[in-house]
Image (cartoon, rainbow, N blue to C red):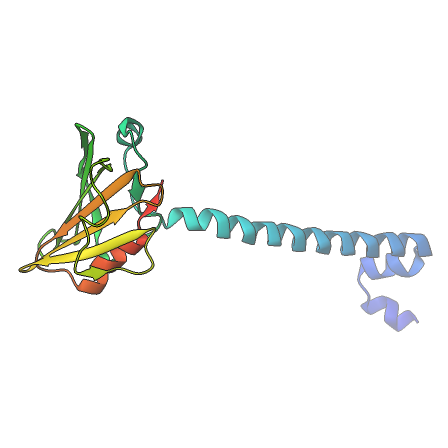
Length: 186
């Protein structure tokens, strides 16, 4: 017993001589601390998941432009496909039309011009039918081809917004389709 006490730490010696209730209190404290660490760890993971998603958002349209529009605006909730980015200085709202451009990081190969407007009552979906229907979009979307130019059309489900997307050389057809598929109302 004497040999054991000489090698023991002061805390161990105190525990040996402590009443049974104190030892139980220490175990409860350790279990409580462990439980708190687990709970706060889980809350931290949830926060990273929720707020981490927001950090993946690409640049958004200016609030002043969004507030002017008299129709539901469509934009991208996540990063743009094909390494494209929003040209922030191109965003404008004028005479009932929203304009913005998307381009590659070097502004050299690809420019996609997007125009949004209130769907004119005189325009029917049969008038804008393109040569190729695009599946998986918010609603009715098609693509037409004019030489090397691709023109995408989408009408919102509520029949209030017409989106026209125009791209020349430098964009893959699948990327162009993804641009139509990823548009969501904001």
